Image (cartoon, rainbow, N blue to C red):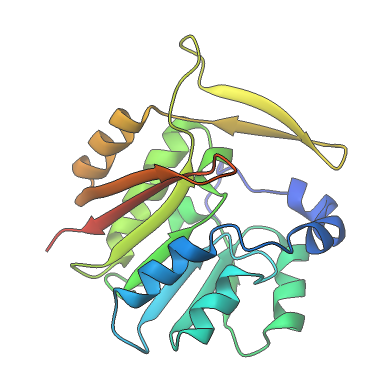
Length: 201
């Protein structure tokens, strides 16, 4: 893992709680749409795969192969118990440890907004490197910057989490700068904000 990269040790502290709380289908419709847009059996990188529920399971159920990437050892230990057939790596998305152009798609649900802005850019650049031409990339993040501030603080099960965002317009620019075309943005009922991009050929 790259020196200086933000790693999510906070999720180690809430892994058990999160496993019991994350039982809804948030993000599943979006991941199903991505899964339907690529050939069956495609290789998908699940960034911030966590314990594998529900999004890794969704990709597998749709007939795709999945590789997980997460910086939380506790989350990965639960992934290995839940889905032992899924290979997963502990690492930072900012320095993705995979070879160039090896994935047909990538998702990053609830990941990028934990990274300070420069590291979000590094993450997008890293994912651009490992995705094939034409590969879709679905991620969640914020869609605005409040009064010029890009950082927010929240509490989850007593643990402090930091959140960072660009505006939706700036995300579009960053994606373009790193070889993507931004195809769509939308928010779900819970105000999770989704970005769907495609790696240019």
